[in-house]
Image (cartoon, rainbow, N blue to C red; front, top):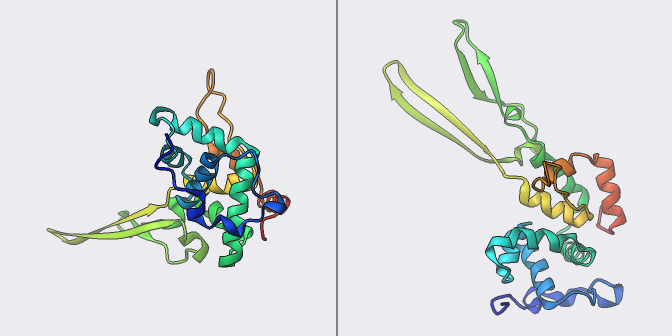
Length: 212
């Protein structure tokens, strides 16, 4: 069932040049719709597969299988290149941002402070580099009146890196592999991504023709 799948023309496919090999003849209309949906939702292969009519129980499997196909990842890279040209973003910027999200740690944003009485408090750091702040989704402060004054609870929530990580790995042609747990563990994009240095990721981007 593909009746509810948006037509490729809804996404300005005309900006792509078939003569450059960007539109692969192996791609069906459903494949192309999946690529656009994957791009528009920021890297959620499961949601894109569901929107393309794949069965809910196997949407994740189908989504990851589609990303493994070179013509699929190549088309997604072509879409991103066109967006990058229009917005001025570079693959280097995207790689650095995703690395900050993927390797972000709550300790980058809070610190333990031991008072004279030995009482330990947690407070926000005031020396967090601007680049690391991109990993922060929200910071909330809750004040609670008490017998000895007002206590403050600080909550720092970091962004989930999985969607942008999957998008970047697809752009670079990196296929997450199942982890060897018993007969076959779940796909762990983070484990695959951690194997690459910044220089290696930029080299892959250059090889794929992404603007640096």
